[in-house]
Picture 1: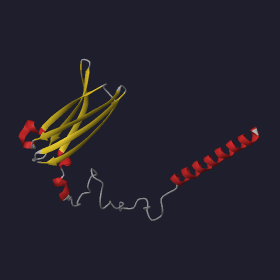
Picture 2 (picture 1 turned 30 degrees about the horizontal axis):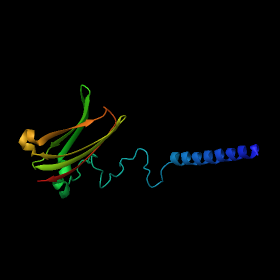
Picture 3 (picture 1 turned 45 degrees about the vertical axis):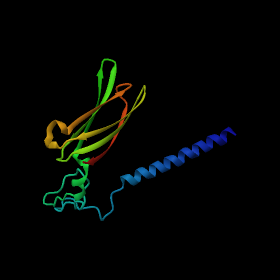
Picture 4 (picture 1 turned 180 degrees about the vertical axis):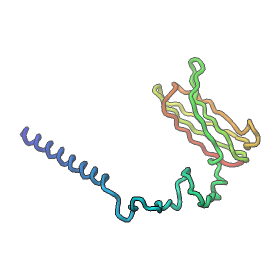
Length: 160
């Protein structure tokens, strides 16, 4: 009976090893012939037609801005978050800055989970246009149970 369980364990280990070895060989295999370029060739590989956001655009390529991005209030905001202690009281500061010339109304929802428990927060901020100076920046101080942990912040903003 004991020999049978040892044999099963040995068989399972062998199957896992063979599977991992096949996966490692597949990763080490060279790419298909159609993707390879000859060494020393003067033509670089083609750039993608639609690069990901935040990726540099190739020289000479047209840079187009989607019209929906101009109307999106989320692209106008810069958010910061940090823990601040005042004696025994710990707060999580959520800062929003408006960089567009539109007034925004933002509803903020926050959930901070730490070693001593979870704290929930909710507020509404009216942010002035970027040209209004100090009115374009607002901060929400949320009392939390301990400094550190996981902070999840979401916001729903719309143009006023």
